[in-house]
Every structure is written in structure tokens, then in C-alpha cells.
Length: 116
Image (cartoon, rainbow, N blue to C red; front, side, top):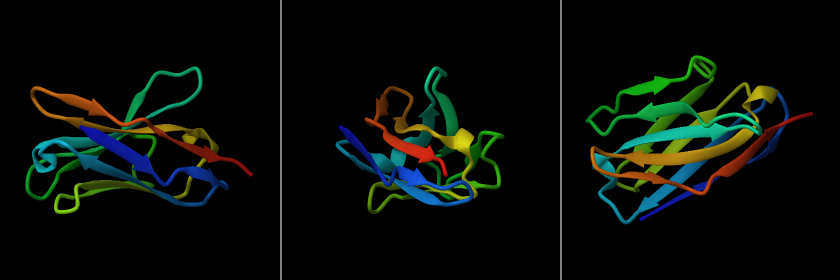
């Protein structure tokens, strides 16, 4: 099982980034996929999640609603996090997560730094 995040980097406040997570080794379409983040000295928190169901219902942390969008491509086994209007407080390591009733997988994380 692998979850490999990419797309992180340094961006100025107000800018945008798109994170990608490539999945392999499990039945991707049957897993709920999520993005979490962890800032220095803080606990890991849920940023956004998308269900495995057809249509992929989504949920977001209040702090990112209206700015971030999570999507998935089951054919390519990819999940994305489009991040717009980035703020300094979005600076964190972002982790991809895959969860089913029995298993819970994590990626290694990608750093997002929002700074001028």
C-alpha cells in the first residue's frame, strides 16, 4: 500500500497550490479519502474528506471552507486538494489518508509553506 503526496511548496499569501495523492496497493474506489495537516507544535487536523460513494460527498474544516476543494479520480487512483486564497496559517505538512471500515493508511506528507 502506498499513498504518495506531491504538489507542496512555498507560496505567497493569497496564492494557490494543488496537492495530489497517488494511491496504490488497495481498492481505491472503496475508501474514503482525506487530507489532514499538522503545523509545528499542533495536533494533526482534518482539512477535507471525500466519500467513496458515487458523487463523492465532501466535508471541510471550517477554516478552509470556500477556499479548498477536494476531488478524486477513481480511474487514476488520485485525490486532489485545490487550495486557493492561501493564508499563513495554512502552513503545515499535509497528509493524505485512506480509510475503510477495517484499514487506515497514511502518506508521508508534503510541506506547504505560505509566506511572503
